[in-house]
Length: 123
Ligand SMILES: [Cu+2]
Image 1: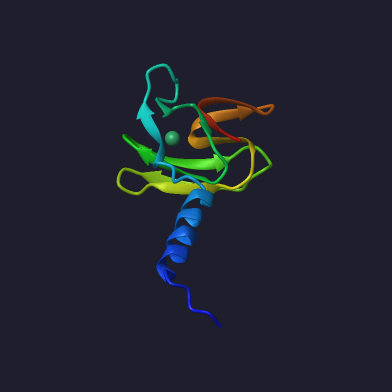
Image 2: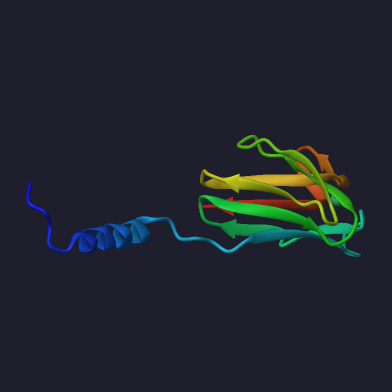
């Protein structure tokens, strides 16, 4: 078996190819729970609508108050509390519109969320 004269050239090429084919690294994506006078329940998610790519990990952080992320659309399942210093995260692996609310600071009537509601648009 012939020994290549420059064995590292092949390795370097393979490494570069792997880097080129790897999915791009995305910066941390954060939704904040903030105080909001516009919301009768006193809080809001910022941003309320968050567009991200497939595979993005979204983290919910509290700037004020104690909250939860509760899925309201049927294409995902999440029910997690979060507060200042104790965030919660979810990695969106499929495209779609993922709706959620904080059950403490919103209401859900006939499928319509009012108050601290949000959605993540993945795709
Ligand atoms: Cu809340």
